[in-house]
Length: 477
Ligand code: ADP
Ligand code: MG
Ligand code: ZN
Image 1 (cartoon, rainbow, N blue to C red):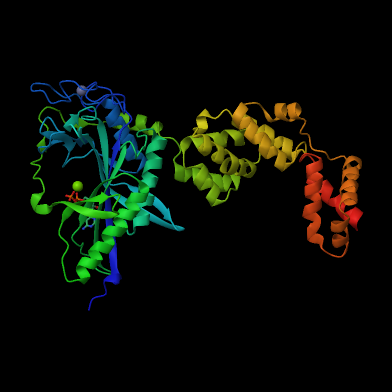
Image 2 (image 1 turned 180 degrees about the vertical axis):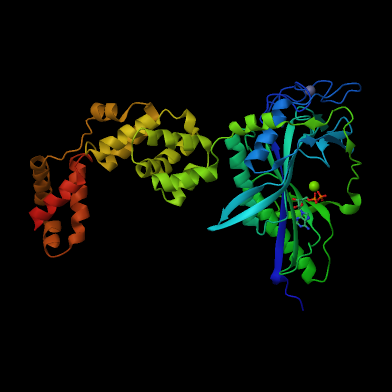
């Protein structure tokens, strides 16, 4: 009997990324999400006869930029192709895509999953136009063509991904890079980033690929993992029961938590691809490619490496701070103001992220700026305020946009470090707590926390904790 647990998983992903251009791929219509149905259309994108497409230069630039960032070969000669099929959301009866001569070939994405480095090679990146959207409601079925003709990049991986977790990490990494490059907003809920997952299994140690199934249009990281886990188990079960996998397209049913067959290979379209006769082939010259290259910012992996080397940050911190371009820029601005990088990182990963999440504010829109944070860090390090007070000041800065200095002055929060003054308070606490004092003197030194707490209460949190500890030790012997 074969052991189907000794099967290896093979996954290849096709990612559709909607490009952040103002206008569509082949006409001047806007690409704004969420507008009234069919208000962003023209004769070109609704497929009227006699119209001619015109290539969006920015879309081409964005695709080349992405290709360069992912180490692809940029084809000096590529062209568009017609992919023919019939569906109500596709008024022309064909989609303009690229087929045998895509703009980018090769390239790779580096992953770090559970501490292990993995390189996932890319097959290609090509450009195409999106289709419209069918809407089914009580009143019947409708077609919204606002999305028809919106520029997409399709990024195709080699079948080199081995686990659902790696698949999610791959999509996450690509999303981060696309956002760094500013070519796609990466919003999976709005469909700006969609994933088709191809999966098969094969006996471990063998080369030949097994028959694959394709799970269409998965729209969250969580579902990528869940759908793949389910599908791998399903394939194992089918094989172990003596059945065979049929090549088919499946859909992830979110509420039932299962994949369901949508169409089999026999029903698959024959797309009858042929070169798009209305568009000339694309010839991209080296001068333009070098120009585009100059616009590529430092990418997350390089940033992470630099944060670890230059700022001595733990990998965990570096990874988190570099996960979004705006977060990284905020961090680097704070560092340039002279505060200690690890202090900045601690405040950002803790209080700042918490408050931004809670109030659903983007970091670049926060009224608490790197200048505010560095001011606060300085007040802590020079002993003006203690760390506990600093946390409340931080939240006040976040809510009001006032500086730490202003708030400390306004609220009288300066730390009490004067030994004489603190001694009086400590003596008072000892006098009011004869019980605890006796127990402490009998050796229950963990009561220190109780005494410090009492002193903090009396000073409204302003006592210098280090000084209080020393005084306590001295007075209680
Ligand atoms: P199709 O013609 O069905 O679209 P492609 O050869 O274009 O298939 O591959 C589409 C995606 O599926 C790619 O990401 C590729 O790596 C992946 N893929 C191809 N064959 C397999 C397989 N047997 N198992 C898993 N993934 C595969
Ligand atoms: Mg395909
Ligand atoms: Zn249009």
